[in-house]
Image 1 (cartoon, rainbow, N blue to C red):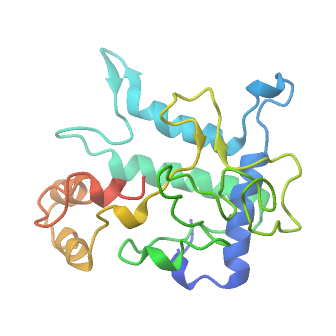
Image 2 (image 1 turned 90 degrees about the vertical axis):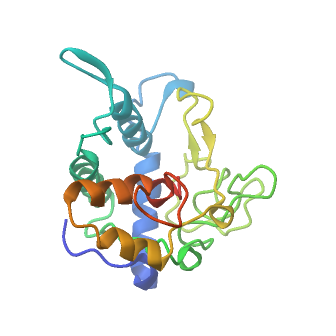
Length: 222
């Protein structure tokens, strides 16, 4: 992983390369010989890894959250850093040279556009219906975003496989406008933490911050 850029300042070409890599990764079927209803993409595979690592097994214990940890556990940064490194290499296998940008939580509007990371979901359902990460592929169904020339013919839309639990499966849902995302003050408070443990807890759960609901520092966009 090289120097990461703020997603807000990516060039138009860099934004398209990043989105194209994500879409091609989603369309890259891991098990092409399986029945059609059981096939899933490389992107879904990474989603499954992230989900299962939160409820894994270890010698002498079960249901261990290796990706986050609990009281006295400090795996959040190390596990996610490695996971993102692997994800970036996977994206680069589809679009050489593409890199993971970082997101400034205090300024979501600049990236939530139809032709980049997609808008908020529709009122009532919260389902994203426009852009490249919508329930229907661009130019199909209710998605008014024009289809780019590189869109994979077999990808009908951005939906998570039905093998996932009902809470996870189906189209992407998003309500950034209705969530309490971190402020500049919150971020500065986290950066001012003087130990690894307090910094991790502040970033992951909001612990020790004065004006943020629990779990919003890390999970706000989730």
